[in-house]
Length: 577
Image (tube, rainbow, N blue to C red):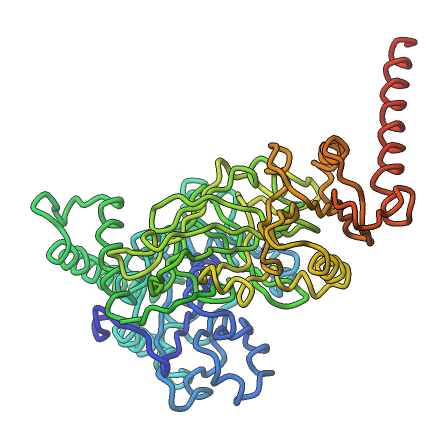
């Protein structure tokens, strides 16, 4: 780090390489670094054998390599690219103990059979890395500068490792993990990263007091190179961290800021200002529309790791572990008309209903009213109107904030799901576009590729008169020029000549049917998804016992009767006991 710029912006010819040394918080750090890259820019391989199977022509397309790749010569595979090295180091004795415990609790680990019956003292002297023995941090850092180390003595390897550290863009410390994330954010101009994840972490860590003194001495004796390298890394870290704090105070601070006792909260505030300046320096041209899918690099906070469905894109993220999540998206060229913010919530069947109901959104810190466009099969499409003045911001980006009242684990919602992360809702895309271009950009248009949806809209276009009001899923708005109201407006008493009943709105359907009857609307069209009602006398009605209307009434009555009979039986049976 001594020989790397204090601030640096990655360019297209740079490849970031995170050398993941075992038990140095690498799994957590890996997901954090992955956030900063598009999914397509990340090499999918994290092990030596996996990289070896990827054609060289494909490897050159990736801008992030991460994992246990110490036996692959990354620079040699990427001619013409600059490899920018980052890593995390850990106090060596604690790292050896953690690695030993990890292997013994993981039967799937390749070293499990060899280690399961070892004592800690034995482990400290075995599974070594060539001439440097148990000093694998020294080994991996040295290899970043010179791939072949066989002809070097242990002392020469240590010297090389120190030189290598000096050329690294970033070296963090497990013992200063949050400060390390702050320093990484500063160097590369990223949004201040907060440590909210714990991937692959032990539930309970041993303290040195639990380990015999003679065992600790054996570990120390076999980790002398790593101990010296770690102390060297500490010196570099302290130097670069202090320089960062002083520079931030000088550029963005005030007279009350003192470098020697600055709090993490204040440091985050200064880093946020620094990030805004670095973002502004990118000079991104405002666009009349924007589309963000979660396969893209994340500029924001309060999100869980990116997930990609087995069936392929689109990628998605859960909000969490807190209740606030933000996205910093490129600025919008402020239009003369309202824009629409549109996003899709997925996995609603795995989301606690009250959490989904509590979702609120703001644009540049201004709350916006949400309108559900359509909800079906675990997916909910939502829009909000955004006035032009809300898109104006002194900051160099458009901030969209999502907030829920609480978070919970997927396991709490479904005990069969082992996922214990705290989450709110899951999203897979967000976009903003002018309201006049809704038909061109809205994902709601995709719904009408389905035959049943297309049949319903064709019927309406044939029969609905100009200015007549239609009650329907708001997605119909993108295909009709008429006023379209949602079911809530209809239930609140708003008049309408047409009602398009989606059979999937189970929570409201009984109440809607009663309102239809009271207002004299009769079925005039039906298919497997919709029943269309109208009060027009010139249109022939559809029988209530026809194939597609009957289930809405007869079958629903039948289910209600069955439910009531079962309730009465339980009450009666309970009294008999």
